[in-house]
Image (cartoon, rainbow over all chains, first blue to last red; front, side):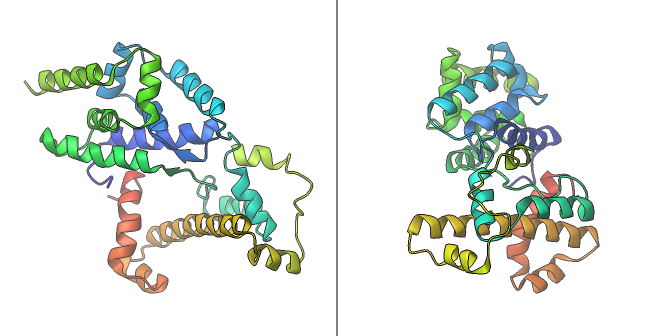
Length: 180
Length: 93
């Protein structure tokens, strides 16, 4: 799936995983994809910032929403505990993997994409195809994210009075200007 | 990091090294919630360990075919699972 992603788009994906991990969430949702885009250079973050979507408040709003919804921020500790119950010591594996393969090579529990985040990435490919983009860049990712109307990312944007349709138009205008 | 940090405050109820009988009990629990939770935890661990060893094999110059043979899966399946991920992580051209 990520073969055709530009360097910046790949960085935004990695930033989404880092965002989920640092917030202690055990999954990568559309909200983390949004956070990854805001925090990574490129057209998406420029358009988002122009509409007042900035890193600290986006991060705070996500943390606030998920905490209110009762989503644990314990970084997948339940999974680590479940393995501990059957005699598997995750921190010992991590310690040894760090020394055998280098620090950070064994990340556990690694957050996985939610179905909606996966759908946003599928829609990203579709948006890129429609725009005739051979490489997938951050603007395509933002369009894909906005097209996934069920995702929490849209709710976060609404909290900042940013309308998905308006943002979509701004991205398309920007893309059209860059092409001309 | 977050998992590491909170493991220090792990509840005392979870033994550092549970006896073999307790381990077997956990895996054969009649409580679906407990049994299924163990399955998911093991599956996620399997995925991370697979990723670690596929990366190591590629870094040591193994072909996708050789890795697929060792994992007893098709070359296509291992390639689909790992090649694009490695590219995204800048580990592969």
